Image 1: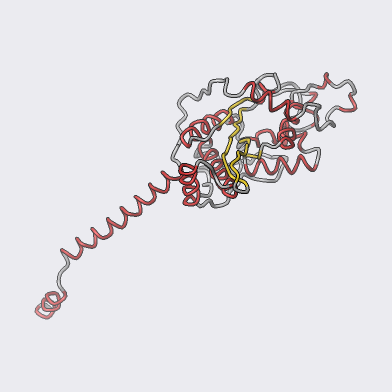
Image 2: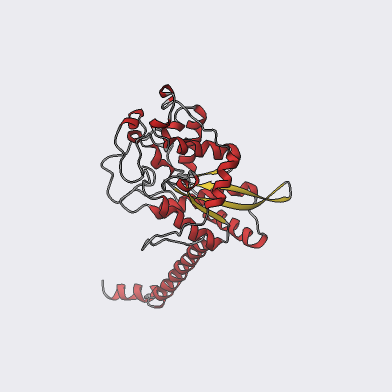
Length: 303
């Protein structure tokens, strides 16, 4: 299940702040199908199986939001967050897993910035039933383009409708070792566990992204501040206030919404058909084969 190369080789690769690339290790779809089967039967996913399930889910999203001329490994995924959110909405509804959809701009009470999804996974820890929350952001890399994360962006004109006269969030992640590690991991995995620490680490750079240079009383702090006074609890409360309130619009986008179980069933049917066709072909060949004895006699008569 590794990513395929684009039909036409990319002429120019985009330059990013962080070195990590999207997760591209082979995924055992039979294992993921077994996880789905277990979830449908028991109502939870084993804690150790959650990363495998989420890795497949991210892989499926990134495949669906790129096209044959794009490379999931090299793409910035710019402008594809709404498509990813729509895919998650359809796929997770099919899998019957609870989700919250929201735009980070709504959380920060500003213009729309970035569509993301939260997922609540029932699981067990020490035999006790509980839930784990994850934030799904497979297109985060679009905020890590080197060109958009220069300090000089504070003094340049806004670009397009949502680009401001500020560096993108990647700039603020790049100011600390903790931020760099978090950004690299998110680029790779496309998701993170929604702990209070992780939520604040994730949303503070977006809050700083929408803070113009005029808002800094001390201009010496411009481009140097790495966190805000907003707590994770306040961020989370605002997420709950705005989640699932915006209609998800996608037009004519077509998704492959095959679940892991459906993918495995299709592969098994294909394999069985190949076996069946092989034996049918073999039967026909045997039916019309010329016996060896007759062949040898004919050879003697007709040297």
